[in-house]
Length: 377
Image: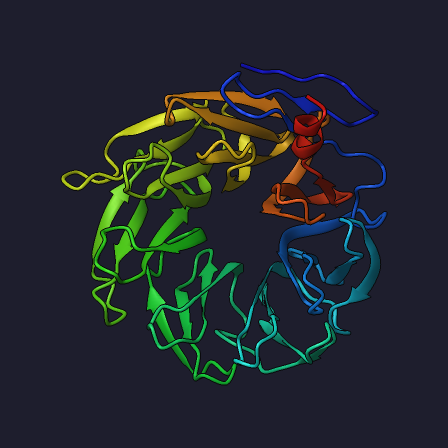
């Protein structure tokens, strides 16, 4: 069901089913990350300057050198200060935040296409110095994911390379990454990876999205960073661009949500006997979906889905009946080339907001006005 009501030039009221709260995610000319129309590939949100609100880092370039940028939140969900991240322009595809050197603040890892990957270490106030590189210096990097894979209390880096070995870069505990372990196959066109315990054994597993009609797999961790056992999901010939994990049907098992190019977007359900063999389509549009995120946008206790598309409007899918029904709502009517979509509370009202990374278009974010709708009832 497609439902949209024009409020402003590009603002839409999204009305949830009667059992849920109203959801409003308006955007306007104010809610953009600068006037730039760059080749943006990803966004990440976190408190970079220690003032308890969510700042943003934007990765620009893709195959062409671009300037990565930090946008500083003024505490009200408006990004009124912008700083460059580093002095070099690079072919950046991904930027992610975590405390990599264990000093209590958020650092930034940047993955570059056919250029050295870069670390930027936070000095505690949202200013950064460039640290050592990580991973293969000149690889076709498409994404990075940050997680503690070896359970030693520090954050490791996963690198997905399209058409080259994927890498797990092990943190030495001080924000350096001297050891790299391959995962997946050398021939994989891996574009995204998520980390979650998919079989309940306490060890983090890897969920791979592969492009170029290659099978998608869950690689099971044996507890010692061995990933010899794998479980397929999908048709075996999907062009999957992005994955995320959530318990959509609330059965206590993690499910896999996929964003596909030129095919419906689907959920693969966890199962103790036959995991990820049962599936359901939540988005039958067969768009070129490049990004997917999950959050309880209407705060009704279940997982909703946000999809970023290239060449068609981005959309929210509100969950009802424990994943049995999905109500589609457009974020905006116009189409963008969205490469990434993320969720964070930008204005501190307790409701999740949405931001999108657009190539050759302004990067836009949407403030969730559901709290105002509820108070006005």
